[in-house]
Image (cartoon, rainbow, N blue to C red):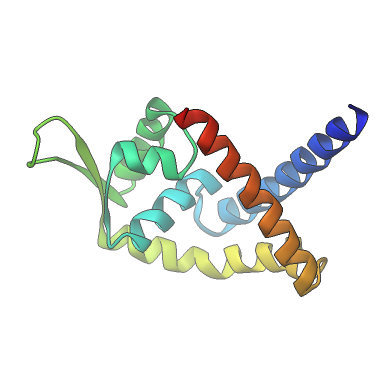
Length: 147
């Protein structure tokens, strides 16, 4: 049982330290949180438009948490909301040109934190093993939620 707690402490600590580094760097560069950057990233990777419910799943947040972040990004002119014409019920988050510019402006800082947090500490094999282990945890959680 103690090993379970040690794994949790290590995972939680690594996550907290890395997220804090991202938040600090992104705040300095662009006044964004890491959560807001993740929204811009996913929208950019999806071609600029995602259903709000799907985006919430991608950024691991509640629908209300996503709504608050989208509202902050909307006020800064980075995204807008659009009704889903196909069913009239859902909404899309749509990346605006200023949001694309902000995302691209943040990429060097994002990459620097990744390098500092992982690339300078873990070798290629360790990074692959960590990726595999964390992906296994994510996949098992997804399977539990689906059941």
